[in-house]
Length: 232
Image (cartoon, rainbow, N blue to C red; front, side):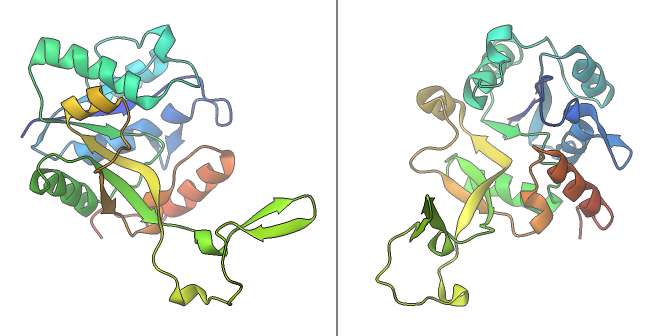
């Protein structure tokens, strides 16, 4: 099985400037993702798609393939991940041959356990190349959330008013941004990683759900580094 890992790393972060190459525990943030996937023989290449020269240099020094700088139209702060990955996939298959899957790895999710990556790759094979998406237990259960309209609160999910204990609720999960594995034909067909028939890769460790988007997230990541071992 040939899996192309694509790391999408735009240079124009506004809330955490330069975050993709900012040192986290002594390593550029993007290096955490490159290093995490490097040991897997199923991954034929790790391609970094970036529009930024500094990220380009750091990613190449970390051993990733960085064949070009991403076009401007795919580098805005509203550009979805799917077209960016299709651009990388089209180039790679045109020059390096067909692949069996594309693994999107966001550099802002640095804490992926070796076991989670192993399970995700195995699940993709076992499920006949159905899309696999990383999910983590939801921090706030939707049945315990509310909408607020001025000074009025209403249950986010309507109920009959019967009190519900949190321990009696069914498990709820949310996409964590750490793992997306999709077949090339599905990516081109749906132009999205989330579609009907996708299967979950449950990632239980709380560190795996960290997605760095703010300075607060960065501080959480720094705290997580103190005890982090991807093999524990």
